[in-house]
View 1 (cartoon, rainbow, N blue to C red):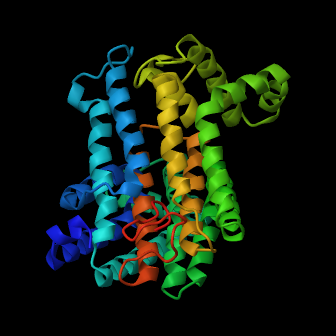
View 2 (cartoon, helix red, strand yellow):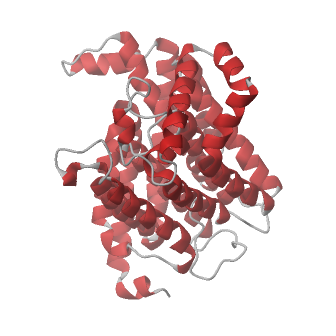
Length: 415
């Protein structure tokens, strides 16, 4: 029994379970109607389960990396050209709160009553399946259902903007489909796993969002690799994540020097060409302050060369937090993949790898690192993966032992 289990009784375990049921109910609604709502949702979940917060021995590398990131980000506000109106509304304060609350939400899954957790996963699976069906319908009709809802509440929207808004739900599905698919398999409805993947593909094509189908392919590949090489594949992914964050500027520079970068930029679509422009501008500014970076949220001040952020997480961290921030991000992600190492194939590790790789795929080409809803969605993916893993264990133990696991250790993303 862990210290936390000794402090809290059955009531708190049931409480955590019902809070997770609430999160499961809200997830598909927010995924379709307003992904920005994931930030307050996960904040509420973390606040309601804050007593569950704990850092176990196996959690320490990720926890230390997060702490370093938050402290360095807050310190960098001293020299950042972007200054919030009030400090407590700035990104640094939000990162500190998010780190605490989202970690508590993850710990709540460890503490949740198994029977209620099973109900939460049923709700999560049903909701994600319904969201998948809605996304397929919207992809086939040009988001007509979304437009009808907006018109019904007296807030009509242009068809092109409706398609753009609904497409955000495809990004949500692409990150959450793997833990939802694992829940489907555990609960005996493996057919719904096919529906989830099909919705990502259909939504990506029908709603003109190319990144989700790339993330889906990358996630499926990662899951297959972890099944085939349960020990080696997570290690390779950990190394790959570290290289992504540490060597991103060098990779862009090398491609530019070889001439391949210019040829690729000339061959891709306008949206991808604009991304590559942002990366080129970011590389130049990174070279001016490679160690400490320009400061938190400095990307906002580099227009028109960069609009809001470079659309590449690694380059944004280098640009704003420099080498120290990049190293912290590398340690964090490498530790997550390290927690997926197994001696035998484990569906939980597969789901964790797929979710992590999908999230990193988007981080490489789409969203800003500090976007609140995006960080919240990542936390939700961890919570969902942990819940699906616990479902397989009945009483809450991992389905398969980690290579260096102790009795109280839970793999971070695969559970």
